Amino acid sequence: MSSANVQTKPDNYKWTVMGIVMAGTLMAALDSSIVNVSIPAIMSDFGAGVDEISWVVTGYMIAFAALMPLTAWFRDRVGYRTLYIASLVIFIAGSVLCGMAWNLPSLIVARVIQALGGGAITPTGMAMISEVFEPHERGKAMGIWGMGVIMGPAVGPTIGGYLTNHFGWRSIFLINLPIGIAVFFAAFFLLFRDVPHASLRKPFDFWGFLFLTIFLVSLLLGLSKGEKEGWTSSYILTCCITTMLGLLCFLLVEASVDNGIIKLSLFKLPVFSACAVVMLVRSVVLFGGIFLLPLFMQQQMGYEEMQSGLILFPGSLLMAFVMPFGGKLSDKIGPRIPTMIGLVGLWLFMFMYRNMDVNMSAMDVINPTLVRGVGMGLLMAPLTAAGMNAVSQRDAGMASSMFNIIQQVGGSIGISLLSTVLSHRVPFHLAGIASSMDRTSPVFTETFQNLVHHIHSLGYTYAQSAQIAQGIIFKKVAQYATVLSFQDAFLVGSVMVVVAFISALFLPGISALKSADEKAGAEIVEEFVCIE
Image (cartoon, rainbow, N blue to C red; front, side, top):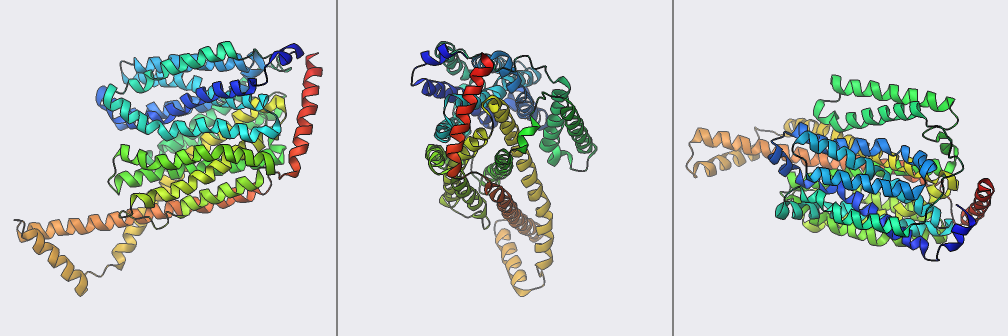
């Protein structure tokens, strides 16, 4: 970056960057959820089973997480503009290949290619915004940018269902082509060319990247397959051993190199570490809850996929609207108070479902999601801005990559953890209900006999009626045990929020805002000295 380039940038350039980054982020975020409702159609088209089709989602998730550590290194080599444009090209190419896939393996490969571009778009965009906005404006900027991050998953299922029903499942990928081309040309012609950082000649940490990739891939594979394969199966044990070895080797390598693929020294910064802990817990609770809620609505309450998406939409929309306000509030009073209020909203979201029931109304489902929307809107932008402000400008790309990895891993942990709680509590409650039922009591006997007589009146024999009545009672008991297990899972999630609340106490208040501006000014001077 030269002084000439800085002077030629118009005053509204930062908003140009914001618009371009938001468009790309929205496209990448949309594709992370739009495919879910189209899975049955893809299965039918390719004649694939559940195990095979799961790789369409798992392959994207793994490739997405594996590339994130590389974004900071690529930025030092080629600059953010080139990296962002290249990521768009790869994502568009992968989307076209997905739409042209002729069998399941080709679709999986195309999804991996798509993820290689999408995995770089989000952290690169976050770092670009962090560079063009001053520290006292980053909360507002992250809030506006976060609207794209939230709106993608929020409208993804609804858009995916509509496109699949009217144009086929391939259209959910091909829709990225006109959007991606428009964003590409905007980035190519409107973004200023930036010069890579002074660490341009930093060698690539191959072994660190290899072991980190092994750690992330084995961890995400184990978490995504644990419930199906069984947590004590040889498959999961192998993933567990590989995960621990990958992490151990990664830490050993990073301790012995000067320029690692991940800058572990950032965790020595108290604010950065506090943000990382809050982000991890937030992702565990949020993604776990978002996974459980549609499952409950569809399996227990009888809603269809489109209905579930529409019920969840108001909360996501409210989150998007509140997010810029949360960012502005953080710029004025610091991130600590908005983050704590947001965590209270997230806790209430989980805790309000402690008495969930199959007979509750749609509004009973929607109301906690509205509380979550307000809470997450106040939480996300202040937290992201605080983490980015805690590091130097040169480490912005590294910090954004690390935060995205934490969120990806946290989301996978949340889904697996709460799914495990759900599955393990069902037999527990079944046994408890069965032991508490007195089948010799007059009430039970009378109820059973009335049910048998009713079924017999429909034309069945007494033997058939008794068998059907037993099945109905068992189904009712199983449903009740399942509902109690869902309640337990949401309660576990609410307890976990307490950990994040404790970490949020270490976030800066209003007194830290001025020092952040002063630090940024010193870093800009240092950057020019390094360039000269």
